[in-house]
Length: 337
Ligand SMILES: [Zn+2]
Ligand SMILES: [Zn+2]
Image 1 (tube, rainbow, N blue to C red):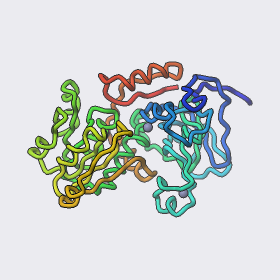
Image 2: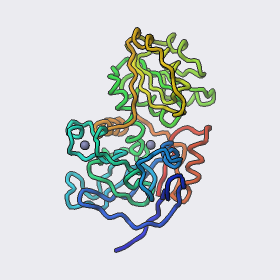
Image 3: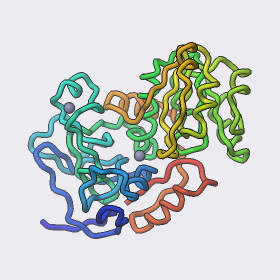
Image 4: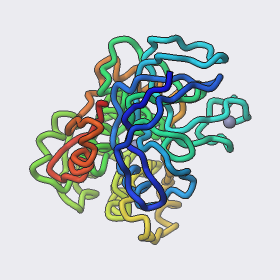
């Protein structure tokens, strides 16, 4: 039967979005249909609306972060059943290439992005390729699960790539941001001692609930070094913090670079500094299924508490983006269709 559902649709390049009625999705053989339980808003949505994502095919449903319940599956879908609670990777890998076989599907040449070449998740129902699906352990709150593919799972992979050892010290810049406040918790959950850095005096007490130490201000390297040797920095800001991030590291330190607030601004690196201090700079963006499973487990165990600034419905999507940009709020903004 032909039915309609409500969705947030990006009409065309730099043309904004509209809440529209669109046909209910139907699964191909290798796809499932989920009822969207929660989706999450992200700064990437704003960049997509500004036209920075050249692979977008229009019209396309916006949103790349989701948790939902399978209500229908294609003929060739194995390992998942109707009623299963699942999250989706941000992309659909082909599942067959050398990278995919090694569990490095983030590097798949033929991967397609949700809210790019494929419809995203700001809708009542969504279509997902089986290669993107990860089952959510029982007892995991939807608010925690929805944050895994783009936030906590991504951080988890960053710390795996940095070979974080329990007992090491991790410094997180932008610690009151939607990514930062969760990065503090993932690092703690993996056994690190954590220093949170923020420019906001008001938000410092909230960060202190999760971090061992909080530093307020733009110059944080000297103070950090007095607390401990810093082994890993998760920089969620970018060029404004990179210099201090680099200075705060002890020898053999690693920077996991996630933030890039001003993509047009270049950073001049003194090579001697990174060479003589044995420093590794790790550019980092996404998560694989293995990382998503790791972060879901920590979430199910209650070691990562989702921090939510607010939840909106599809019709209130404008309010959601206002909330996302509100500097007084802490945490992610969710959408509940
Ligand atoms: Zn995101
Ligand atoms: Zn592949």
